[in-house]
Length: 136
Picture (cartoon, helix red, strand yellow):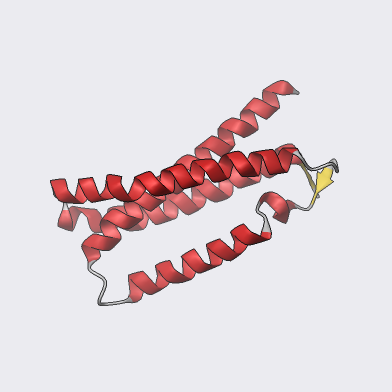
């Protein structure tokens, strides 16, 4: 059992680690396909995920803050729906990387955009964690 503030810290770590790992996979493919179009596609893939994840950070921060108990099970940093989405996304990502029909340039731009969005969501959770800490 952890405090509500600790849930934000756990969220920050999980999102940053996930983002770093996805971003790393994209960047590893990047040099071979580097072009202006690839950079454009990376930004294009980042934007919807960036907005979606920032919205999720806001909603999850409010959800965590609304818990009435002082100590909460550490797994509650995500609601069940998020765990299901993550399971799907990870499974789909593994399928994409292991499918020979998916061009490597797709992995480069898509994973770089998605990983950046995930990592920045983790940073936002960290900001919320430190803001909470400064209120204590």
